[in-house]
Every structure is written in C-alpha cells, then in structure tokens.
Length: 171
Image (cartoon, rainbow, N blue to C red):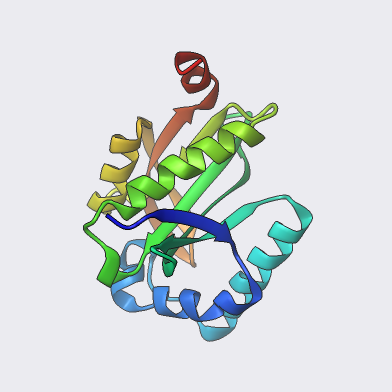
C-alpha cells in the first residue's frame, strides 16, 4: 500500500477539479458544474486556504494526486462545527483511500478544533461509498434531511464525529 499524504490545495490543482466534475463523479451531487463554477470553486479553495478559514487538500497516494479532501467551518444544529467532504478519482477508488484521507482530516480537525468539537459530513443518502467511509471512520449517523444543492433538492445523511470524545479516548 502506497503512502497516503495530504498537501494544501495549490494554484496548479484546477485540472483535478475538472476531472472530478465528470458525470460519474457528480451523480450523487445533482450533476456536474459548469466550467466557470469549477474555476470559482478552485479560486475559493485557494482563497479559503490563504485566509486560514478552511483546509482544502489534495490527496496524494505515493506522491500522485488521486483526489481531494478538506474541512471548513459550519454552523450545524446551533453549534459551531467543522464540515468535511472529499472525492477520489475513479482509477483510485476501492482501495480505502477516502477512509485513510478522512482519518488524516480527523487528526487535523482535532488539532484545529478550538471551540469546534464536531466534524460533520453530509453525503447523499444514495452515495453508499461515502456513507460507508463515514461509518468506517467512526462517525455516527444522526439523521437525514433535504437541502438545496446545485439548484435542486438533495437528500443527505447527517454524520458527526465528536472530536473531543475521540481526543479523550486516545489520551
């Protein structure tokens, strides 16, 4: 198994977002974005990383970019929390990369936690792979809801990881 690392999202990573914008990769997200939306997402990742507001990363397996993962501040159930999201390119799927990347993000979010003691994830209810990643990573499913995403309704599961509890269990 090749080493898995994360590196901060950089100016040269736009092609990775374009590859992830394929119909097969966005079927659980109400479809693909326009090229302009992908370019704005890239600019937003750079801007949020530069300000320290978010932590967007490229997933590297053996030094090769195979996906992306990040975490950013949200307000969830009247609580300040972190939200995480990820993608793994088709040729790298099925090898546990997402689960390993989520474990790295849990450690980063724990280090950045401050007042934010919860890490949340919101995969579509029909996204079996991402829901399985949440389960394997130790998140608890606490509900589901319907949100507007990319101009349409999307039914999502609510997963939460208690960063404080995890930290005390491992202390």
